[in-house]
Picture 1: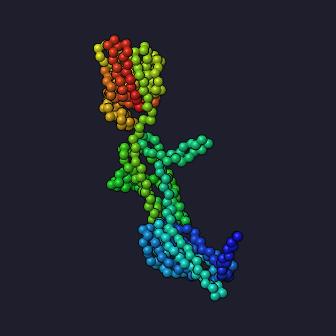
Picture 2: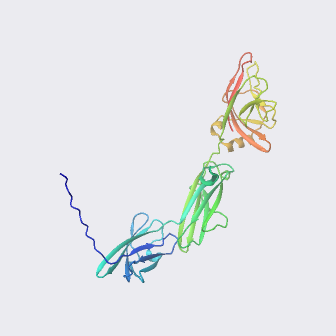
Picture 3: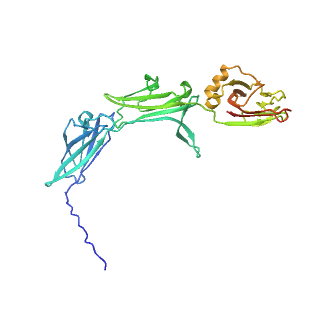
Length: 363
């Protein structure tokens, strides 16, 4: 037998009117906000607006400076513009709750509305433009390295009533550093700054602070990024033996014939008296500097260039052992190419016929 449930009837009351509340938005740089009342039946003349309370960014309660306002309606619409001083809140993250009361034909109607103070400032950093598969440029977050690559940081200040009057940009290095103003004529609405890592040291933390102002209103934003080691991106290596005219191209990462290679690590110097090494072949612009073994593990382009410049570059070394490390520079036309070589094996035989030198390198 099927059972039947009795439908529950919900009683409703026709108030004979209705109204809706909206606001035009409010940021920490705006000096006022406008609340609008819409009464579709156009049968209300006044709505009372009461401030119930303010909550700050730490969720603490703050007493409103003005308790209530009366909003007059004409032809079903009315509005009131309230100053930030009367609202009692100017900092992003604050909010206020309001109660709205009206009556029609002896019936009371009550509605509620909340207002939050938003942050008008948006900071984007660091980024570069990268072309996607459709050939369109996309903003792509990136890491800042200690090199000459250019990255960008953006700021945008979007107050409701275009209230911003000025912006100041400052920068410092390290949390305990002192901020200094960045020179330039910056728009208070939006702008882009170029960031180049080679003006800093590795592991520096760089800070930028943006301060937008409108009269006594202020919004501050801060961003930071770390300067990272500019590492060689490629790894290579080979085993060179006694094969005649065998060389190596450090740019192309391949074994080549030494008479046609524009740069080679060639001719393992093989002897029966117990040592071997390497030397430049057909490219006289390929030079080497012996360095500490830790340099290979560091994989730091800036350190590599500095060690090469500070050393005494030579065309080769007659006697090398497993674990020896060298930095090098070679040329391709006007282009400089740097890298780090580590000897991984230096194998000797009594006759010398099966001697070989094995290495790996970063470039």
